[in-house]
Amino acid sequence: MERKIQRITPNFWFNGNAEEAVNHYFSIFKDARIGRTTRYTGDGKEFHGMEEGAVMTIEFQLEDQQYLALNGGGDFKFNEAISFIVNCDSQEEVDYYWEKLSEGGDESAQVCGWLKDKFGISWQVVPIELDDMMQDGDKEKVSRVMNSLLQMKKLDLNELRRAYVGE
Image 1 (cartoon, rainbow, N blue to C red):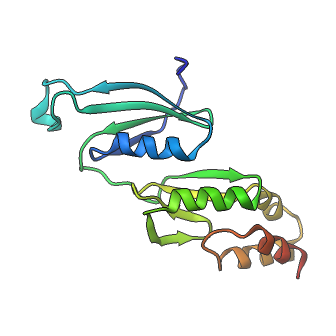
Image 2 (image 1 turned 45 degrees about the vertical axis):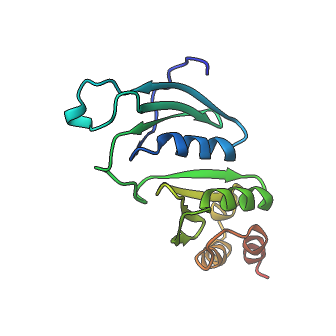
């Protein structure tokens, strides 16, 4: 991976499964790269509890966005306060990303295009066209789209389009 430092890099705190998570995301996103990996030494084991040689961090990129995965232990958990939006050009892309990211995740967290993956990370899988619909100056159109969206788990672009035009 090219060594360009991004000013702000999201850091995922995993409980020993950073490699599994990175490999999972790598299998989903077509423009994905795995970068440098650092490993724990014997130093500081009384603080971090990790075995010498265990993965500490993995740098990776998804769609030109850099991330860092840290095996930091079980002290912290992911929640919906932070989510990652996957902007999709078509229903086929919505279907693809929804299927891949939701596999093994928390089905009770699926609402209005949001899902939680098997690692507890929240994602929003959204057709780009929805943004234009929601920005329309016609309040009735926006209201119909919003009411339709609120009934969905995975977003259905054709259903949103029908709501938008009043069908």
